[in-house]
Amino acid sequence: MTAIRPHHAAPRTHVTAALNFVDQGEDDLIIRVKGDADMPDRNYDYRPTDVAIANGRAVPRRPALDWEGFALYDSPTALQNLKDEEAIRTVYYPEVEALIKEKTGAGEVVIFDHTIRSSDGVGTARRSVAHVHNDYTETSAPRRVLDLLGEEEGRERLKGRFIQVNAWRPFGAPVKRAPLALADARSVRPQDLKAAVLDYGDRQGEVYELAYNYGQRWFFFPEMTQDEVILIKGYDSARDGRGRLSPHTAFDDPATPYNAPPRLSMEVRAFAFFNEEHAA
Image 1 (cartoon, one colour):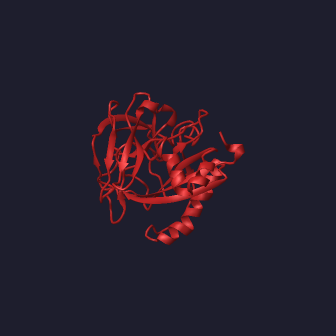
Image 2 (cartoon, rainbow, N blue to C red):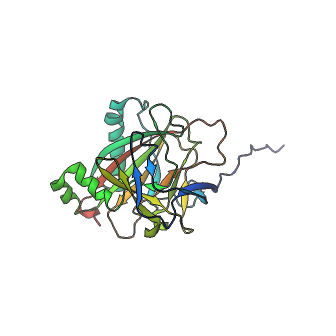
Image 3 (cartoon, helix red, strand yellow):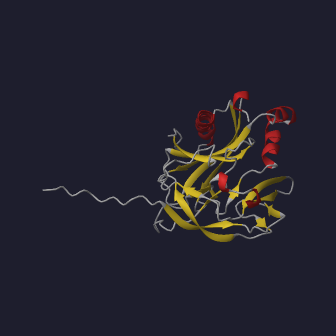
């Protein structure tokens, strides 16, 4: 008698979902950040647009940090408690620093902050960001280096290649709600990137919002676990053809079960500086 093999559904090759973009004609974008950083005032609106988002686990070649601008890695962590601020800095930061050095070849990594997010804004966690954005711009990334390292050291660092990179990891249950969609850096045109001023009152920053174009390519990694992490480029000073930045957003996967647990995640932001042999 022939044994009956259990049926396993083939992995989804892609999902179609709405992502929130700004219009191509938008200009002079301003975000006024007051008490609640998750609910700022904007002088513009978003346009939901249905896009095809490829399953990054099912493609012939996994996305790579220097090509698409992001990459998924197996990288278990010893950190278990996101409420333990000391452990985040003394246990998790060194893990992230080592990972970035290993995967990029950087000579030095400077971690400068982290954010804990939840799809439901549970407790003290900030709500997941549901519009396509990039954390740094051509202006704000070098400026942040100067702010962190001081004018003299910062100017010296800016002479060589550097990248701003985020390490994004879920905690707890595998991600079913509000997964992350990431743009292939090579498919984003310069005119798609819309600089938006972050006005904090006493200081200003700048991020990119994104306008949609039909040539953009999008990816996600379904059901990410705590043993996995995505490195995402927010800026790369090199201009040699490699992926320089990857706009991204949380999105609503139509296949998410109604009773799926909230997504809990942490992103750690860092700059990585390269020795001469790695410089552009």
